[in-house]
Image 1 (tube, helix red, strand yellow):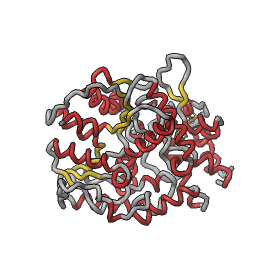
Image 2 (cartoon, protein in one colour):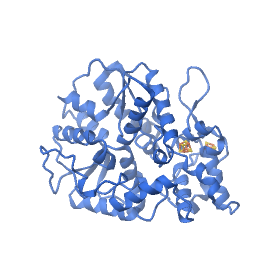
Image 3 (cartoon, protein in one colour):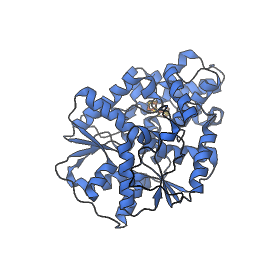
Image 4 (cartoon, protein in one colour):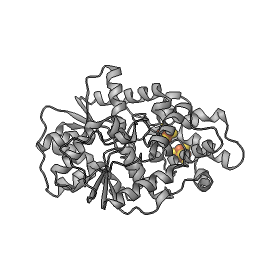
Length: 405
Ligand code: SF4
Ligand code: SF4
């Protein structure tokens, strides 16, 4: 088996990888336990469009045709190329270890270069990200407006909390909870008012020109703050800092951690105890960018399995046997449908994908759905409301905050 290389960004560098695709179509499925036999659907795009042209394998063949000069990227391929949440199910299922998401993003960069991409709604938010430093088109100077008076932001600290655009502007309560939990656990912590978007909204749709500037700005900002560790409570930012920033900057001068890992380590070191939470039966949605996008970088199967256990250990400490799994979990999770520019461009498809996840969560008997990404959570919450579900949605950090009190 060949190990995939996740350090490349240009389509022409993926010739050998795309030639390895044997068109087996395993990437459309989810190899999770299925008591009724067979496989679960795994690729939200193929599942919705009911046509294999939307699956990961077909996208690999599109790349091959472009690289072989047999097809010139044109308008007719754009729906297939951009109707993809870059969830990485295809990457996780592929026995040939094709770095499908990297290849899809490289093709999108080619589409942008050819003046074809991204699609119209994606153009709007990516332009806002470039100009306002956030894709929500909010004023940059309001980025830390969520910071309560109780937090005095310092110039320098061992740990910088990278808040990200969604928690800064849309899910501010998550930013506050993350600060509170980390401070309660004795962390020397600050937030930088001049943090820029992590650049994920640009990378995912192929707008590569501004990325180096954003990455450099953030890295230098955190370096100047003396950061030994940069912590993110957003799966998308965490993925981007871990998997993308080194491609554009080289080795980062600090460690990057997801807030759940950071807190799990402190709990394991005995820095705090969690009170069990009563009356809650919860299931966990693995955000693609926190779960398998990082899991794919871990070559040892044992260590990769341990990676998926981190949030689960915290949830078992909080809930014991009242933590239950959905059938599609860990590497085999079903995406919330929002990533890769999908939610802005294809809101109905994202809603359908999220509702499918809500139905899967309800079927476990849980009364609460827990996740670890504000971007997934805003989509899942919209799906709960739209579908009339009784599920309560909460971020794992908010549960930890509750249990620390
Ligand atoms: S990408 Fe991998 S899983 Fe998908 S068709 Fe090609 S070889 Fe099969
Ligand atoms: S990244 Fe997800 S949505 Fe895109 S082709 Fe792969 S499995 Fe389908």
